[in-house]
Length: 470
Ligand code: NAP
Image 1 (cartoon, rainbow, N blue to C red):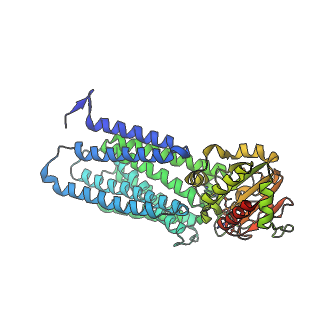
Image 2: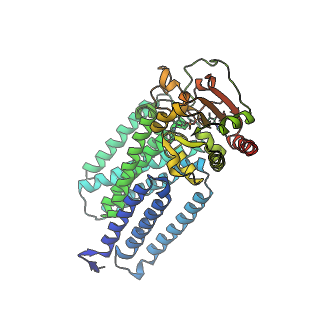
Image 3: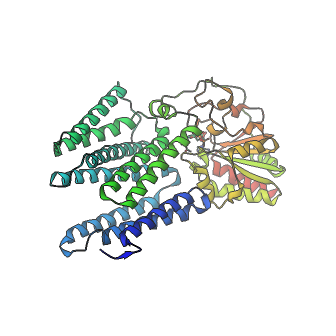
């Protein structure tokens, strides 16, 4: 199509607009009140890029009806399945859905490489650079696909953590075979399709064996890492097709995934190697501390309500259990009741509370908790000494003092919310069950602490009805 505006074709303009929407969308995702809109804007941008590619990439010709029908059928099937999954998914199952979608991206990148390799064999213009891009797209896309599917299965509870004996050695052997074969394909001039399929199978196998032994609870970090792989593979696809929107999208996903992986590891005070080869949070990790550390004091709902009602300042520390109990709306109701009684309430947000970055922000934004009430961990910690009551709701590891005072603890060095500096602590959880890291929490035995056992939503509802009577 030769229609141009300011020397740019409609296709190029659409790609520029789409790329801008991706960047804007990503920027808006960093603030809970704009995240929904940002996601939509980037989605519209992607829609524009797809439509422009179909309409303007090549001159429309009726004899390509089969291609158009296949594209439209693929779009329709993908849209229906994606929408159904997105509508039905529970907030707590979000990591596995992200993993599934990410796997689909990896699979697309792998298929693109296979198709383009076949084109090259049938008379395409061959350059070593192009071949390397195709081969890397196949390897990274396939690893991302099979790895993401295993991560999905683990988070759904369908696949158990399993480490093969000598798994590390097998993985290193596989990597050598993969890169040896890729090197041969790239530089021998022998464009063999069977060898390409062998590369596909080896890469898929590597993805499975790479993710299989990683502790199920470490999956958010692994998913983020695989996400960055998919981004890279998509960027290679962008190179192949000279498609700027695909290139920008891929680079953004790749870099955002990498940054997220690094941020999660930093917030947990763990190296990526430790996540990949360690068993923290999986079946293997055990507490380094002895079980009993004192006595546990319980508090009744009435006493807890009185303590809260007569406090000047209350801080809520939400954790994974709040998400499990789906108690975000109930905690917002409690906040409104306490504020009506003149209590100053804030939320102390730990960066890795819950099971995905920003989990608590998303959850509380869903319940319309005003954003200024959400304090970052550092600010909340500064405020802690002047807080009368800290209400820990379904959080465990992110308030564990072992991170500060037990060098033998697996979470030693992880920044935590220092709730023990407040005047009173009330912990809402169902039992003495452990959190993600699978370790004891001495906070529960702290002299200032009292436990209110029960499902977080039930306990909050009981607190609200008591507070209404006060
Ligand atoms: P946590 O340490 O996993 O503890 C959650 C607690 O919630 C459990 O001890 C559980 O105790 C309680 N709970 C579960 N269901 C409940 C319910 N219905 N009502 C009340 N309580 C309930 O959670 P966290 O303190 O939020 O810490 C997050 C952990 O995940 C950290 O170790 C972090 O490093 C890790 N992680 C986070 C991310 C991320 O991006 N956010 C990524 C990877 C890893 P009971 O069973 O006794 O009720």
